[in-house]
Picture 1: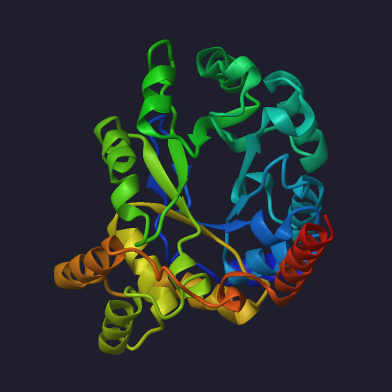
Picture 2: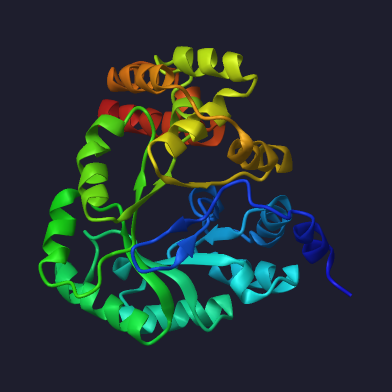
Length: 318
C-alpha cells in the first residue's frame, strides 16, 4: 500500500513548473524547497514531508545547514522513489574543514543516498586554500564517480566563474544566487555572464522586498500587477523571477504559503511593462530607514538593545 505522501503526490499528474534542461543534459525542477536560512540546525522532517505533499519535487539542503539527515529521512518516509525527488546539497570548506571527497561522502551518508542530483560549491570565497580551480577539479571527480549527477556553484560573481572556467573540463550546470528586485541591478552582470555560457541561474531570497523591506518602492508595482492578475504580491515576485529565466528556491512552514508558491506555475506571465516597472523600482533601492522590528525579529531586537545598553554602561563606567 502506498504511503499517504505517495498517494498525495500521485494526484499531481502534471508539474506546474516545467523542468529546465541543464547544460549537462540533466533536468531540474524549476521550484525548490529550501532547508537553509531559518531551518539551520533544526529538525525539518515534517516540513520537507509537507513540501513534498504540496508538490515540491526539488529539495535544497547543505552540509552547513545541518539538515541533511532530516531531508533524507523525510524523502525516505515519503515513499517516493529516489529518482522522483531532485536533491541539491552544498560543500562549504570552513564548516568542518573537510575536503570535497570527504564532504560529499559525509553528505550522502547523512542523506542516506547513493548520489545527489546537484552538488554546489556553497561559496567560492570559502574553499581550501582559496583555490577555486583545484576545488572544481575535485567537483569534476565527484560527478565522474557518480556521486552527483550535476555540479555547480553558489554565490559566485563573474570574477569567481572566470577563474574557475580557466581550467574547467566540465561547465558548472548552475549558479545559485540571491536574487530579488532590490539587488537585480548588481546581479545583472553575473546573470548575463552565466546566460552567455548556458549556466542556469537559481534564485534564493526572492521575497526579500516583502519580508525585509515592507513599504519600499517595489511594493507599488507589485500591488498593481497583483491586482490585474488577481494574485498576491508574493506570487508576482515569483513571476518576476520566472521572467528572468531563473529557478526558484523558497521555503515556508505554512502549507497555505507553499500552495500559494506552487500555484505560480499555472499563472500567466507578467507583461513587459510590469517587469520594467518592478526593475525600475528595485533599482532605486530599498528604504534606507526602517524600524528595527521590520528588519529583525523581536528576539533579535531585544538582544541588540541589551547589547547597546551594556556598551553604553561600560563606556560611562570607564
